[in-house]
Length: 222
Image 1 (tube, helix red, strand yellow):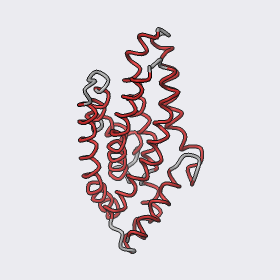
Image 2 (cartoon, helix red, strand yellow):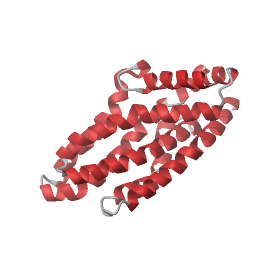
Image 3 (cartoon, helix red, strand yellow):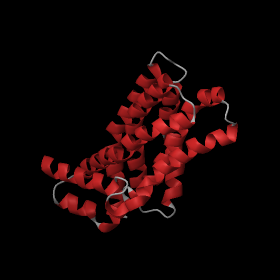
């Protein structure tokens, strides 16, 4: 079982990582969108460094949340249609285990590159070093929760028409607690916001495989 899950994780990471697998260059779209928001924001509010420094951290969080919506359509629907999850079930891999592996793969393919993209984004938004460190810490603990929500929503909407738009509408309110506590760390230097974001993220990661697994079974039986 461990070997099967390891092979599945390797296959999912290669498939989802930008520039590799069947996604090709389209996997870069979330990162390009994230950087585009950071680049355009100074044009919208003006180049005043103090204003950008005050609002830039929140802009990075909102851009990260919106960028997380873009890959949702290709997380589950393609493999569901191709019968990949049926083959995994025949080999003894439960839907919950497959969804947990998919969450880990989605996080590995999305979050590290997003954290790296925060460095040029911080320069564009005139963020200083300590503020960037707080933003990175918040995103580090918050992005696993975003990945868990994303895979669950992708499983719930895999067989629906217009799933991409619906997934975006579902993700934004569900991710609001992570955004609230994560972006709140910028105003609470005691670190309590990061701790709360980490707790919310951990709970989501623990619950998501069961919810996504149930949604996957319902989609296969429909």
